[in-house]
Every structure is written in structure tokens, then in C-alpha cells.
Length: 135
Image (cartoon, rainbow, N blue to C red; front, side, top):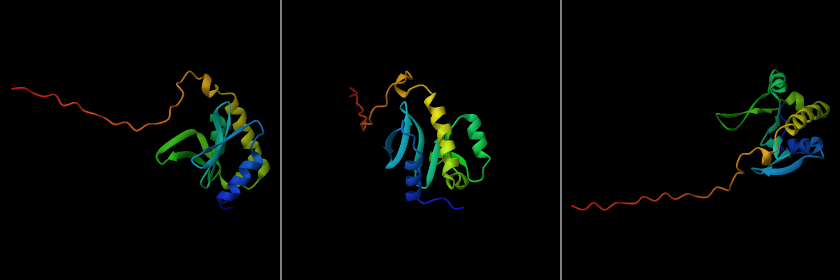
């Protein structure tokens, strides 16, 4: 089976997204979050889930499954790109989404993690001071 097109993935995303999930746009594509943590995302032609180590290992045995890289060469180890075999059966997909949802719901809430909240990036202009050398 070939990978579904972008619109098919968006339709699948909406059909399996749990009601308790918050939906946000990330880079122009939908993502689903629970407690401030992303667990499901569509990116271009990829359907991505955050999974426990055991579930990642199980899923990576399937042909076409791979670790998600938002930036080439920088894998996001907890996130797996679903293979076509999972995407072709909505019941199987919903099962994996539920696993992802439950795993992510058990994680520390993003705002309670103790990490500083991400701040918007501002362009930094470095200034150098030239010290006048007197003879």
C-alpha cells in the first residue's frame, strides 16, 4: 500500500483524534496535545505518534515505520512515523493513537516540568565595543 496523501492524512487525524485532546497548528499542520505535551501530529505526508519505548520497538518492526525527524539528521526518539499498513485500517490506527494518548497523558504536564516556558525568539544583534588604544 502506498502512503496516503496529505488530505487523506488530515482526514484520518480528525477521525481518530481523542475528544480530550487539544488541537494546535504546528508549522501549518495539525498536532494533538494532552497536558501540554504533543502525542500526535501530521507533517507533510507523515502521520506521527509519541510512544513508549516498548511500543516504539513493536511499531518499528513493521515495514515503513521509522523514527521521526522534524529536521533531517535530528531524530525525535519518542516519535514514530506510522507505516502505510497501520494507516490503511482505521481501527488499528485508533488503537495506536490510544496507546500514544495514554503514554503522553502519564507524562509530566508541560507547565509543571520545572523547565522555563519557551519564549518567542527575538533577533539578537551582537554589538562589539571598540576600545580606543592610546599611545
